[in-house]
Image 1 (cartoon, one colour):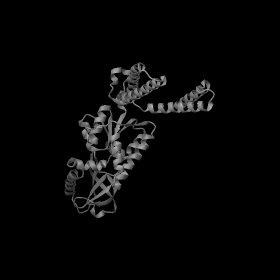
Image 2: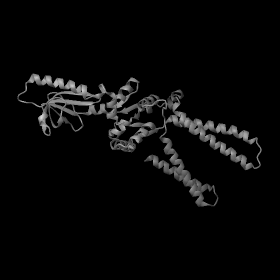
Image 3: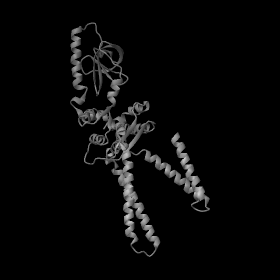
Image 4: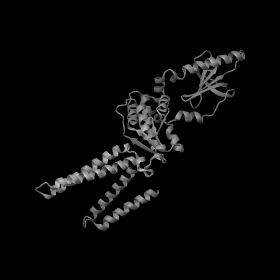
Length: 367
């Protein structure tokens, strides 16, 4: 609110200065129009500059100064030439000044990311901004939970969305497959929700790595260059990033940490939805999508039963709960042995990242 008051005072000062000075003589309407347009341009430029990184601003300033110096040297050469009209010389010099300043500004802003601000001392140090910078992966954008986390205030700072991630989202949104198309559009809607959060700044980075084909490797290179963390829920990207020395914030790990702990021996009510992979098993799902495998529950498909938890299998790829529906005819020792065998079977088949990493990648990321 205070910033908008300062902007309003600046705008009023520009308009009043134009009315007082009268740069266009007695033409009051032209003066007011020029003052209002100049004030709006300055305010819009200030709002845009606030979103740029310190490296980009310093690079743009250095590039502009070098462009002005180059234009001055060229103008000295132009001044030694002979023209039929003096206005031609003035126009050429002004055109060279605008052109060189613009080229220096654009080139400096584009190459500013390569500056090492630590060489200028602690005044320009961007270590704090590096710690609060996170690079978003395509999978975590499509997942949608990142918007809710930002709204709660647990995630703040600058969220970087690379241009190649946006391009991948657009390709998914334009897919002929309706399921992929819906996921892509969901990801674009999630980005709009994240941008509306006050304590979060979404920064679109145009930087690309043409020599790197895979999006995951591009994300890792960008995070290493910016000193940022990667926010994802892709199991494979999580492991590769850790091997490459890049910190990762895994949404699945956060969700697993916040889930209520279920201990062996506790009783829980579940709805048996379908038949399990092993003999006489039933499968249920909790509200958060956690799979519950219940032994001796095949005949209870379509019913809600109370099952006793025997073990819990939890990894970064998800959680699985194993339970047992008691039968009067079963013996304790044989049932426990069956549960252990079934658990080993599900460990081999239900987590494809152990043997089929690419299938899990497609399932999680939706690529």
